[in-house]
Image 1 (tube, rainbow over the protein chains, first blue to last red):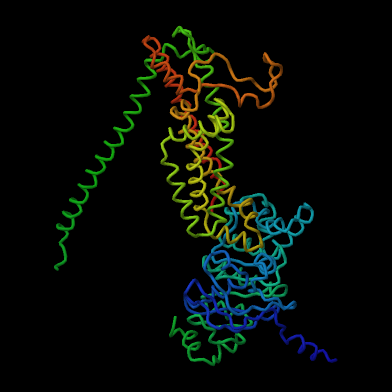
Image 2 (cartoon, chains in turn purple, cyan):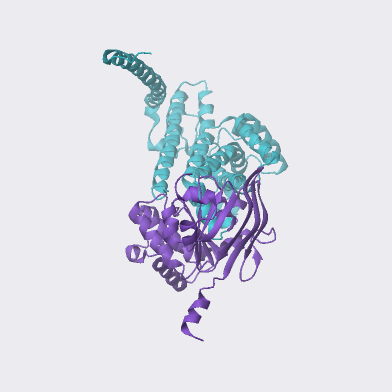
Length: 265
Length: 309
């Protein structure tokens, strides 16, 4: 086999997850309407769309965050590969889903504990008590989140004393520590300044070597910069999904084009 | 409408500011009245009781002679009863509060429970005394003991502990809970690692406010039959008594008296010399309550220092 062919083969993306006819209801209000969308393995997929279009609702379905609040209801499936589990099935424990799917929130939400404990928390929840293992994994996660050099000498300091950008990278380290298969980002830079935002975007770019990423962003430039695939959502519907370049250069749907060119926001 | 001239704007502001300072004056006056009354009461008690406030007053039992009478059995009894109250009310109240906030589904059952907790806080304390007389003293056979009194007061402050636990939990941002659940934690792990530690300052404050209320309660303690004249202390753990060595918890079954009952007893004596004792004991009780409140403030400050989001 020729080298170029090998490269070609590698370029065929594998499915990591797939939403199939997904509907979601906040009590009586339908927030997601028949969404079908693939998530490709070790790629960054961006969800864009105006406020209230359901992109965060969609994202939070992947780790069953909606199960924390009464009255929420899913219909349809999110298939998770390679084991083909339906993440939304009532038989699948949401805790099992969250053990496999990590999440980084809109506003940095470090626990009011030490930097070390923040990152070690996911491991502790899984019953890890061995100090050596904890030390190793915490260091590895902090390095993965590109914050190790800034905090290695003060792991016992309180996390909320870090700057906003550092807090957000710490939250990424917290999610990485348990080796998730899919990492969800819910507008991770909306509370950060441009420099911190740049650091997070660079990080997202590096992380896709290790983990599949689904990112919600209200910032189209950000979607264009970090993602391989982009989905445009509007009023709870998936309007268009495709390679990021295609979506931004030649959108197929008029509504996508209007949004991207700023005629609809 | 025509735009206001600068003079007119200034006149409007001046009128508004006059009302500002008027309200400020009224507010300060109201505050001063409240504070002054307390200061007068405490000061009056201190002045009247000053003659009795000596170390002997704390180490003597009550006596027929006012001058040699002390509050030893009363302050020891108060502290022991408060200890039992806290030991019973804190686990029950905190667990109930956590359950209601973190586990209970919102439906009509929890609605009814919530309404009832609010009602419990309004039940007159004498009713708790009657309830405990029937349940703890007779049905459970605890008798007129420190245990009965402690459990009675625990019931009394339970609603306060539950409500303050719930309020402390509600002050924790949802994003902290979500952050914990998002890494795969169970509800109990979230409570154990986050909710309980972060709610602790608020819970402790509520507990101490509850205890400060319980410490002055007289009616339910009289109802369950605290003695008004008592010249011995409950057996200390492992001390030698007439019936052999006391066990670790023998003291909970001992008869007792508490500060407010001692004060009540002294004020009802015909001999005016006992009024001095009552004033002195009243001052000591006030000092106990105020130092508990001070402890609450200090604890809250200490524990909150490391909790921010």
